[in-house]
Image (cartoon, rainbow over all chains, first blue to last red):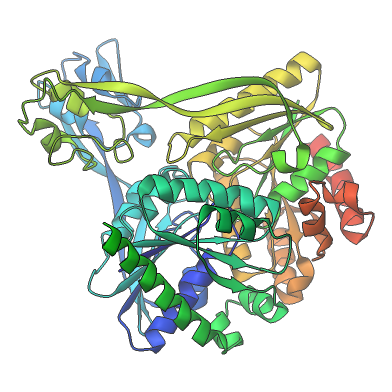
Length: 287
Length: 288
């Protein structure tokens, strides 16, 4: 089963949920992977402190033009929708940072003058942490395009066990890339106007993707009741509520898991797992 | 004209609450909300919309089933796995590269423009606000961010305003790069947590990559004094201007629930610190 953890608003507790859920499964001797797909700002490693075993560079194919063969016909520039290749006075210029790696220019060139070389956009690292198979991506600083790196992280999904995906915040392309094809999506929010506004956007996103989802309310006793009212009126199950707890916040600041700081939470995470399984099973029955 | 962009790397450190308070304290400014896929500043500023435009930027391919013979060329050339076995294109997976359009022997595919969002120019009690909404599951947030900043500059020029306050997005990717390039300075809002510090360092490096001066503010500094000291040391070593340290106080959430900025809602310690910060930022902005 693939469980994605997302939220419109940042800082609501995605990483907290992902790492604690993974650890509570691992401690019950279940096969679990944690894939940190927030490749712009990955944080799961700060809580799990994995032993990194492999590091691979991830590249995006960008064109290289052989000037000997190029006749300056300009067909490559015409097919490119991203202005990544231009033909000025019969000379071809490539702008690799704009390239989406579609390969159109390579296919269209009548002279076979274009080949592709990899431009590194980041790395994927894998390792182990207390029974958890750990995978994350780290986007190179200055690189704008994270979805191809997220795809590379997700290529490591092993469907035999439980795979937990920590998604980036927001609702645009990186989040879509991270959450699509999941069996269940947990939306983490907080009971404030910002939390509610961004939860609605996130619900719109998972509905568009057709992923069964439930809500987790973090710092559940701050703010107001509007998130609860919204979930009830939309028929979205509230899977777990975590109160604002100074012990949890201080533990978090030091990179400690809730299940270690307040051990009673082990049981809560076990119940959460059961609810997630029920959500996924209900979806299978209905389809 | 000065342009200050508030970013954080990590989400939820308090960017929008701080931008809202700065908006209340500043004189003669335009606000721009560049967190276009989860915009929240409007919840504090109660905008009255003055102009509203649709935003078209991305495109996706559409197959005409009448003309399609099912030859499979499109599936073969698509690198994004966007064409299904029965030759329907998934608009979410489609990048709009048009390679299938070019190579379809039946000319059965065309690129159609998507309405990928909308943007607004509004009036607020603190002056004009330019904001936007990216459509659900849409791309090109970077272009929409660039547009929002451009419109904010236009409004500032027309109305003779000399400061643009930009609320940025979390992360270090496309929308963040688009919101900081060419700005006068960025202010990074961090918190004394391992995640907050880790993410602050990446976003400070990003600003360095584009040669933009960096100010830092530590929010909820009393959550972990030891880590706050680490941030202070980091700022000294990297020669970053530390503009202030805001204590943790539930008053910030209370103000938000009332749809008010904290400086309007309370005159307590959080407000006093933000006022001091804003004065310091004024000096720093005058220097760069």
